[in-house]
Image 1 (cartoon, rainbow, N blue to C red):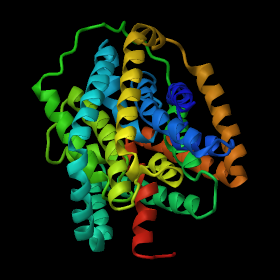
Image 2 (image 1 turned 120 degrees about the vertical axis):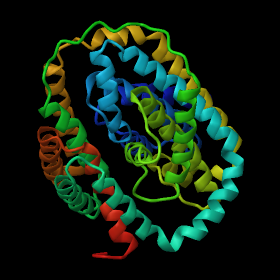
Image 3 (image 1 turned 180 degrees about the horizontal axis):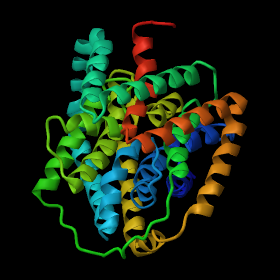
Image 4 (image 1 turned 180 degrees about the vertical axis):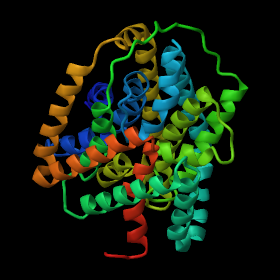
Length: 386
């Protein structure tokens, strides 16, 4: 019976990954209210999380409407699509994700003691580390003043959203900033035919995969910077990254962070990912690490195979005029936010949509909108306004 729910989780991960703005945490919140047994829900989550992560790269690369964890992949992915190399971008994501999971599993058990010792060392300074991280992040942008302004505004909206007892405070935040921000700026353009070229995972790409996995592990130590887009941006300070390398890095960060979130849950009782936190409430992660890792790897492999076999169909969709789809998506987001978070969620959604729209129009990096998570975390750590 548990295997059946694992398969259902894979199916739901595919559907949720293809729908821009729909986060895996939202799906898990809905599933949690259906009266499933703890074991059934656990197998759903273990399958849904990695599959959703893989599939969500399809809209972020080809359609330009990302979700939280893949927001920064839009620029390099779209650049390759405009050159007819979108399938190469997709293949790099698939290969990198598979290798990242294998690397992460190889490092998993040593990481248990690593997280325990390092977290004890940095715990008193986490707030200061986040402030330093934010300053470096903002100063490296093209327009630090505008970046700081959007970072701060997003932070205030994030703080308000997280302190209004919404069912899913992240739904109106990220749906507005990223999904609606892209929808409002959508313009139909002529996309060249996508070439189905062979892609080799050479040592230069392996290097980015490895550093992505390590960066994902460190991200699990710090609250507020769990978004792979933020971590990838910070990593560029120390590691020059080309277009394909960027995609390899961000997909590896995503997978590494997910795998190591099970390690932090088991070792320091901290889960930086919402899906892992939900799983920890209903399933003894520390007692089932081998099972979780095996199922996670199987789910990633299945998702990668499905996407690879469907790659030509995906490439054909890129020239579709998404104007009508965007209208339907906007209606869908409006309805789901009203149903889940009510009128307050709708107000937040409207404000964050404006913010997302302006970042694109003013040429401000949308990663600055991750202040919606970082600022409330810093305020919480220093007990300001709390």
